[in-house]
Every structure is written in C-alpha cells, then in structure tokens.
Length: 116
Length: 230
Length: 247
Image (cartoon, rainbow over all chains, first blue to last red; front, side, top):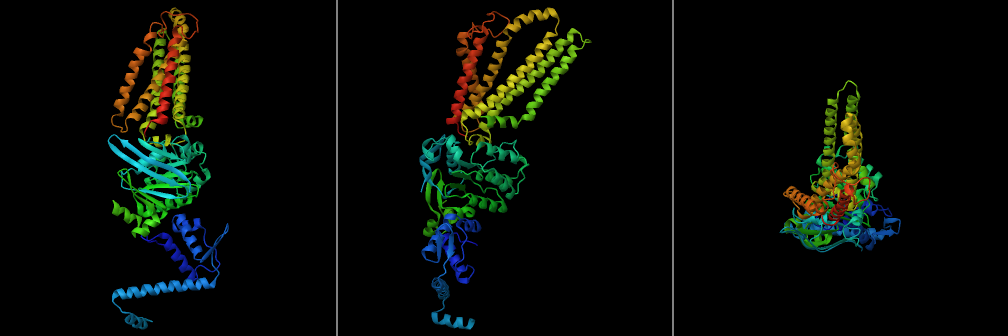
C-alpha cells in the first residue's frame, strides 16, 4: 500500500481498513493482523498501527479481545453505517470535484445520467 | 512512559566550533525517534556522546540514569557511519566477537539475519561492498537486545533492495521496552517509521514533535517540512 | 580481559608462531654449525653475531607491534568498536600489555637460552672472564632491559593517549605525541633516575654487591624503579582511556 506522507498515516490506515471491510476483503468477525504483523507488512511504525486500531475500536468498527487480538465487528448495523459513511464521502468528493470544474448541481446530475 | 535517555543542556565544542549547543532531548521507551538535519549539524556528535565515544563539553547526558560508561555501553547498541570493524575479521569473526563481548547478543538471530541479508559468513570484512557492509553492520547492531539503538545514517549509500531489508530489520527490532534513534538526512524512506522527530542544525534543535501531529498541523510530509526548514 | 586477550592473540596468531619458530630454527641451525667439529673458533663469533641480529629483528618487531596495538584503536576507525564495547579503559590496555609481556618473556627465554649455549662454545679463557661477571649480573640486567622496553611501549601508549585527549584532529598528533614522549624520557632520565644513578649498576661488568637480593641493592634498584614507572603510566593511561579521550 502506498502512503501519502503529507497526511497522518494512521488516518490513511483507518480509511484503508474501513474500505476493506465494506468491500468484503475483511469479513465480519475476521481476526485482524497483529500490530507487529501489520507494521511489518506496511513498513510503518507499530505505534501508528496501534493508534489506528485504537481509533477503530473507539468507533466500534473493531473490537479487541485482550490477549487474543483485534477482530472486525459482527454488528451488521455498524458495517452498514460504515458503508453509508464511505459512500457519502465518495459522493461529497465527487460533487465538490465537479463543482470546482464549473458544473452546477443540476448539470452534474444530467452528466451522471448520461454516463450510467 | 519511561525515559531511557536524557540530555540536558548538552554542549560539545571542538576548538571554536559548537557542534552541539545546549541541546535538550528526552528519549522514551517504546518509540522510534528521528534526528534529522543537514550534514555537520550535530547529529553524529550527539550519537557519539550517547555511545560514549565523545565526552560532553558542558551539560549532562544520562542513559538509564547512568552517565556514559561501561554499563551504558552494555545496553546501548551503536551503529556508526564508518567501517568500524577490525580489518582482520571475517563475518563469522565479527559475530563471535559480538557474542563474546555482549551479553544481549542473539547469536542465532544474527546468523539468520546474515542469511536474510545474503551475506556469507566466510567473507572477509575488507572485501565487502558498501551495501554489504551496511547490511552487516545493521545485523550486528540489531541482533542485540539493547535498550537503546543508535543508528547513524543506516541507509547511506545503500541500494534499494538492501534498503528495504534494512527497514524490515529495524521494524523487527522494535520493542516496547526499547528505543530506536535514527539519524538521517534521507528522510523520505524512514519517515513512516518515526514516532517523533528532532530537527538539528548547527548544534541546536530547531523543531521537534510527534511525526503524525506535524503532518496534521503543517499539512506536509516530514520530508517536505525538512526541506522547508533547511 | 581474557576475552580481549584472546582476540589480540587470535587476530595475529600466525605471525606470532612464525616469528618465534623462525628464531628458534635460526638458533638451532646456528647451534648445529657451532657444534660441528669442522668449525673453527672464528666462526663461533660470526654465528653469535647472526643470532644476535635475528634476535634483535624479532625484538624490534615485537616492540613496534606493541606500540601499534593501541595506536590503531586511538587513531583509526576501528577505535569506534574498541571504545564502544562494554569494557573499561584499563581492561583494553591490559589485554594489549599482557600480550606484549608474554612476548617479551618468551623472546627473552629464547634469546638467553640460545645465547648462553652459543656463548658457552667460546674458547675457555674468554668464557671464564665473561661468565663470572655476566652470570651474577645477568638476571637483574635482563630484568632491567625487559622492564625498560616494556615501559618504553607503555610510555608511547601514554603519549598517544594524551595526544588523543588534547587534540581531536589527526593532523598534529604525530608531532605532539613525539614531543610528549621525548619530554617524558628527558624528565625520567633527569628527575626520576637521577638520585639513583650512583647506585644503579645496570651495566653488569662494574661494581656492586654479590648475591643480595635486597631490592635496594645494586642491580635490582633499577628494576624496582621501572616497575613503579609501569604502575604510574598504566594508571595514567587507563584513566585517560576511560574518562578523557574523544574518538
């Protein structure tokens, strides 16, 4: 995975994990790699991974069983709202991007219809 | 958070030149630190004082609450920039030497690491290329279970393949009980490894902070920030 | 210290074996020549001369090597290794000096061993003259020479170490260490040995007491003084190595 060094790494890791969950690359209830394992794979400081995991735990997207590891949540509700959150962000990015190009909101709906 | 190294108003003068000028640095366990700056800025000098090779001109430095001496040398693993191994050594001599002189040296791990670095134990140290020597030195330094690792420009003159191996080895040595201090002016490759950074120039600390926070606040990579500052 | 000594020996063991084996072989060859009945007396002197020459060469090699043992750690890159291992300055110094001492002792045994046999082959009248005088004063003389040269190396070590404490560049270091060394020699000759010069009888042929092994009598005074000098310079050099040098 390529990182953008201008943005906090842990945020990028969180986003990447969230996407993987929504897309199904990480299944519900699946065990996440340990902090050390992921650090070695991504070539990133373990404390950064730790921080990402902690944040994910806080958002209840993952849960940590002491001594056993971190797991993806099994709550379908959480995953759905996650999907919503991510798709919302993609849409917002799209709208903002099109607006910057000069498309008004009405125009961009038409362009989208043509495309699909 | 426990402190492993504490430097207070540390200064080092060479005749008229102030290589280090009232530097305050605290290193805590379980973190990886970067001391970044232009060449001649004082990074190597700081590391050498911590390693016990240079004596401070003013100020204090303690490692695990002890002044640099025999005890600190036994818990500090120093990787200098130069070729410091005895010229009569073969790689296996170097491994044996470290095993004999350091209680915390993991001999088996070192042997495996030598294979991982694609080095032959029978090779003479004088016949190694720059990249091979870099990998060997790093193997020796990181095969110790030290409390503090001081790595002086570990990536200098290293080819891209060796570089990846070195980064992997550094991550492998990370432990919550130890600290790693990396000096480098090649920031791009190591910045993802760093918890905290110190920018050192002309013997003074110009900037310091948590790497992620700096990225957030300044909106740029540490590498970019470095270029801006210097 | 034993670990460091082990490596000091290990790194040059071939040279060590070579030099003493060579000396012994030369000694044996010369002895054979001298023992052969075909030889006339004139050639004994020549053989003795050859042996002395070979012996001196080995001696110089040992002394120079002894000096370089510390010099390379102080002035070359490998000093970064020597002075970051968890050993005290005195341990590092001691390991080198012990090897030097072992070599000097071994050299002495070989040289005196072969030397005395070679000398004993000289015609009778010459032997009687030399033997009674040399045998009596041989031991303190030999000890004096040994301790003097040991101190020579140690004083060079001290000069080099002091230079490394005062200077950081390599540029003027040779000049400074030579200066310090000659100053020390001068100082020791005048001030240290000075008061004892009347009593010193390290040139064996002259006066002196008989079999008194009292330390302050004749030949042994000088040896005793040398041993004190050794202690002084060892302590000083070790202190500097531990606390003051900047590599």
